[in-house]
Image 1 (spheres, rainbow, N blue to C red):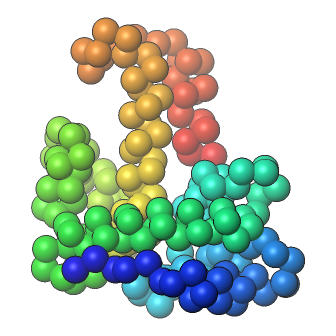
Image 2 (image 1 turned 90 degrees about the horizontal axis):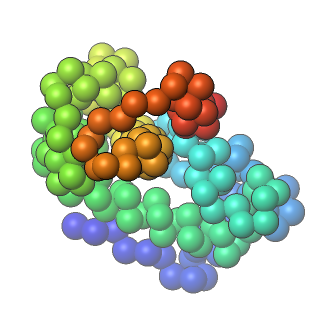
Length: 175
């Protein structure tokens, strides 16, 4: 079942509550406190900063209300996607569910890669991934895919690059 978008008035109330200093802009810290990952823990700060970078149109490292509306829709759309692949409705996705999700996105990856994803983005026991870390994984994977595609000019799924090209490609994704 899809989560509906709140009304414009309700969304503005959410924005205003998150804007604790009443500046008309939400910082990464304020946004982190405003979002929920379903575990009563704050959203992953790295993800919050990535999303601000994605939606901050004026480059001030905060988001205004219009940017917040776009970010909220983005998060809501991904939450609905996450719920679609959380087959057992546990509030997290296991390796099999992650495999199903990424396969449907067009990724054909080895079991070893899924194990790596579970270790890197999963809960401490490596058995499941909660929503915000699923979103962080998907955004990171999209960025890595775009970086790879820039070098895969023949679209063979293989590239040959120098070490510096590699670093210039991945450092922005991990910083």
